[in-house]
Amino acid sequence: MAAPAPGPGAASGGAVGGAGAGAGAGAGAGGRLPSRVLELVFSYLELSELRSCALVCKHWYRCLHGDENSEVWRSLCARSLAEEALRTDILCNLPSYKAKVRAFQHAFSTNDCSRNVYIKKNGFTLHRNPIAQSTDGARTKIGFSEGRHAWEVWWEGPLGTVAVIGIATKRAPMQCQGYVALLGSDDQSWGWNLVDNNLLHNGEVNGSFPQCNNAPKYQIGERIRVILDMEDKTLAFERGYEFLGVAFRGLPKVCLYPAVSAVYGNTEVTLVYLGKPLDG
Image (cartoon, one colour):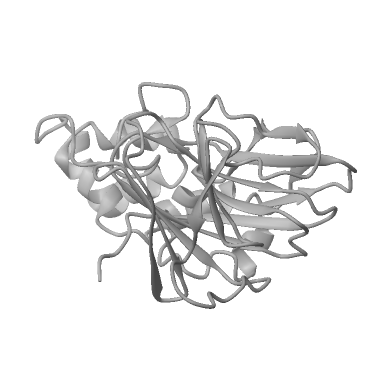
């Protein structure tokens, strides 16, 4: 399991999981405990404590990460996530308890959104209050400065005149007056307006997307997959199992956060982090 990221909210490969154990092969008597005993002990610990345990020795690391549906991750999932998130189809595309915990760590931040929105009890859905002449957005808890990452976004209410999904730095505003495309309104954010299929950055339209004749309009409830590649510095989108193409290239080497902006009163937007995208 990876150590906490060096900067606030920034992460290279996700809040849960890591590249390997940070300590030697043994940990005294603890390193000789049976896996079933360790799993029982670990099942009472919180995520920050599990991160530390994963660095003790290879045996502990394998015990934690060998089975992503183990009692450790099932218990942590039950304690961390709302019942609504677990019993509905919000997390239906996540294959394991560990993936569900990771998704919650990457969900919308209750402390980094417009004052006119709130995050519902399920932990993944943004609700915009019916405030006139305001555009309101939200960022996730964790951003990325390296690696490849994918997440799903879908609207569960009317789009209104502007409904934008994309990415933003920590400096990008999450609220402004009027009904505008907030994501993409400055040089700190990049967005795809689902209403008119325009790409937006630095206050300008960067062309239509996807680049095809008679591109279909977004349908409410349709899941859009966003793919951020910090190695190639690109942002791409998928709809269903169809790759729509690369929308933005030449992204800066800074910490970028999944983000959305909305204008319609009482509309709701859900975002679920998936992890590393699958190729092909």
